[in-house]
Amino acid sequence: MPLAPTLAVIGGGQLARMMAQPAIALGLPLRLLAEADGVSAAQVIPDQLVGDYRDLDTLREVTAGCAVVTFDHEHVPTEHLRALEADGVACRPGPEALVHAQDKGVMREVLGAMGVPCPRNAIVGSPEEVEAFGFPCVLKTTRGGYDGKGVWVVRSAAEVTEPLAVAARTGVRLLAEELVDFRRELSALVARSPSGQAAAYPVVATLQVDGICREVIAPAPNLDPTLAARAQELALQVAGELGVIGILAVELFETTDGRVLVNELAMRPHNTGHWTQDGAVTSQFENHLRAVMDLPLGSPAPRARWSVMVNILGAEHTDGAEVGRLYDGYPHALARDPRLRVHLYGKELRPGRKVGHVNTYGDDLEDCLARARHAAAWFRGDLGNESE
Ligand code: ADP
Image (cartoon, rainbow, N blue to C red; front, side):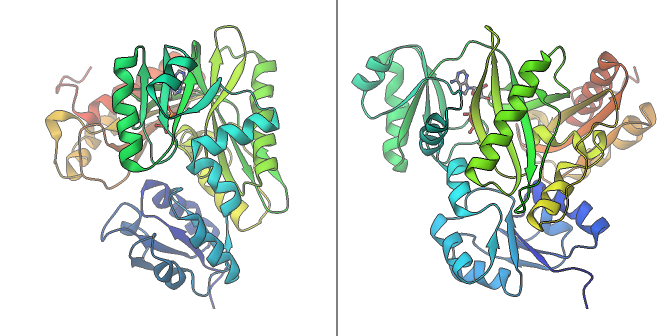
């Protein structure tokens, strides 16, 4: 007899892979639906099926005998989630919550109605409507965007053509938002269980380059404690009112005039929470598992004064290289910094692709930043063989 009930996980990316570590510790068997043979999580979760998450029969096959299913991504069609729930499989997070992470238009409308501060926004369908909204602005496809894809900053009518064409071609709506004059981007992460227990991690600062998260500092340096508490309260409010189960990441803008505005919601472990693997008492991956299984949550308290996460992105000059190229970086990186924590995803290198991250922690922020940046650059192949 297994130690615990089996949890089904849809999607074989690095988030599912990183759920496997605490699942081992907790003795929680996982069953994976991977999109292809040998993808990131499929390398580490033996009980697996390869198939299409858009196919209901496949979803039924992988969840057979499981009381609960959770997700590596937010793309499973809502009607399939409803069908699984009708079969008696609890989807965590569920379809009613997930739609807010799938559709930015719905998210803006619902958050607005809840009184959650967001950038001024409107759905637009023509150049005239964008012009009426006002330039400069940000245009976003309401569905299907990620890592900055499907997001355009537009300053004139001429620049509106492409976003409108992309939206028309992909059959999604287009959302216009004011171009927020932000000081920096923050993220507030919370875990919430079906029993209603919630845990809020310290609010972090995130550096995004070209729409991709590069670095995270926990906690956000020099953040006004009132604003930090406000960000945590907003995340708890959103999680509670939308009925989110598992991890909710609320990406925020800290404006130059001292407010926080909600940018995005993610209902799964999130890149801005990877620091918790080494920097918090309970990692976001463990709290995600605990939450979806309705177990008591673990402490989100930091283990060190500062934690820094830097992503390892594939570089142009290593395009197509085998993942083993990263392993070649170990002797230097690990010898140089015995406290460095490395997390690789088993992914082939492609320019701009997230293939891993490093975490550092300690009492001195500048030192943590320097160590994490050096290691990430080393793995990326940006540094020569000089052993500075
Ligand atoms: P994605 O779905 O790709 O994560 P986001 O909506 O988070 O898209 O936007 C990606 C990035 O674009 C954000 O991290 C931020 O840097 C910038 N951005 C998005 N919306 C705005 C806005 N209204 N004002 C200013 N910058 C924005």
